[in-house]
Image (tube, rainbow, N blue to C red; front, side, top):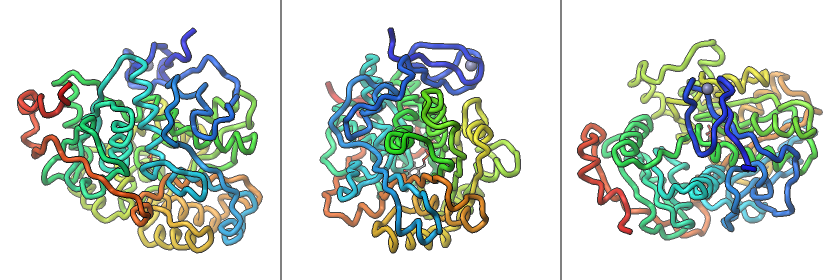
Length: 422
Ligand SMILES: *Cc1c(COP(=O)(O)O)cnc(C)c1O
Ligand SMILES: [Zn+2]
């Protein structure tokens, strides 16, 4: 029997992996695993949850979430059961995710999954941490990936190992818009017939990210009442909701946690859409959206095209869990990051600071009670990691082009540069 099937969250149609789209509707496809019992192995990394991730073979890249029972931050907040789920890089905590964020949980499982299905190269767009994680994974697994990034993201795009020619970096000159990178990546995929990695539609990404809550469940034999995470696409939140439903079905916990999802004001499209009950239109007032993106500290949260309204997307996850959203200013996030560092002795990145600030807010407003079991997901400490002693390597772009000039014809003409010589 196959390890899992894909079921459309919109219309229930089922498919064989590695599909990304339903033939009948716009719903996300969700994995349904043959093994419904929660039986982690004794591995210390995320491959302990191999029954519930699409890849069948593990990798030896150290990946996973460390669950810490907070004392100092919990005291400061007046909480009794605060678990910090740390998915960055801090060897002293037992977390060694190589690019310092939970994007590592997406990249390696994605490549293993596609490789197991006979796909040997991918295209993707990224504005930051996704590019770093996929560049690292491409190098480790010798799996060619065309990574399209806006020029503005280039500065942050280093990895802790020398990249091999498997990393095919395409830079959009003069561009700071992730949505443009998504468009060009789509065009490359079509023109050169290389599969698009799929973003939120890719179950290897979602199920890889879902291992944070699985690690919590392994530790606590249950689910938290509340889950706090900073979001850009919200994929990690969808993943957490999906894995929680699998856990409940397996008899672990009684209901999925309430989702508390935070964004960095003034760019908070999911927060606005959820609180106002409006759809998200990525193409409305683009200049204003870009102006807002320029103002935020947590650039990894700047996604104009999140999977919000589609079946199985962020709106459904929020509805099903009676969820809440937060818009956190830079000042609030910085203050929360300082308090985290002072109490827990750990520098966290701007995105994790946004999630921490949301938890401070929820405590202040009485949204969470002091005895509630709470999981605060520290999704990365990417910027703090820059201060460590690791050697930073950069991939050289194989192609630089302005977004206006990146047409199908130009892509076909650049084909030999885009693909590695084999
Ligand atoms: C990508 C990223 C997020 C947002 O994740 P989504 O669930 O995809 O919205 C949060 N924190 C860090 C550190 C990230 O890299
Ligand atoms: Zn469907």
